Length: 295
Image (cartoon, rainbow, N blue to C red):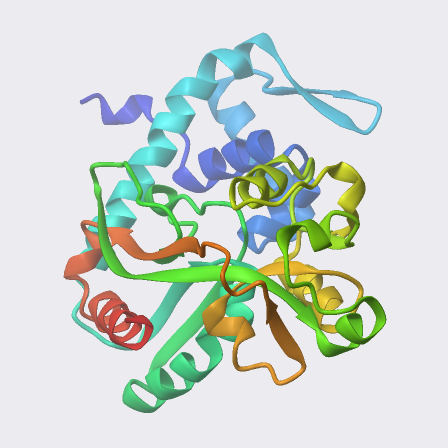
């Protein structure tokens, strides 16, 4: 290798890649924990080291130049390699102190994880647990999380996945809602009922409920939120009927399960981590603790 030909450093490359992927210097600086002028100097340093212009400024927008676009695939490959290095190093770590990031849906994160994390802190007080509460799938291969709790089996070959158990969901409403609208005894009693949705177009919710024997349309979705926590709170406040896991809904005294003879909705609970991280002592400890608690 001609070492004298490499005149830039990784921090400069990382600053350039973060700016491209996040769309602005300010967003990249926040993601990397840097001041914006510092990050700007790193990008400028990469341009100076390579002797090319990477961005053009159009108003407040940064636009990649042709030279920047030519470099981007190579820079992304460097980013992937850096991630693999970090994964490998983390996998060989044998300390049980340090940060572990757990990704889970916002409902699971808010309602199922807190007591589990309380006991985990007692077992391993040196751990720093960061919860990524998201209803999107975190990319474990890019270190968006170390461990993920999912409701579908991952198909990436470099991930380890364990099916902990099959959970179930059903229809629920608050006592306040039932006092106002009555307790349905037949599926057709819900034809004009108000439901709380949880996705953008409601098609997944409506298809799933109608497969259970209901006859609902978009007009039944009176309120919706892509936040599961917000949607569930609206159900608890009596604003409509919602779908929730039995584990979360049944302990709530103000909530009643509707039409319990309807087929249940399966909600499998999968625990997933990267194959290399599974050899890390602290990742393994958290993984096994979650597996035992959620099983």
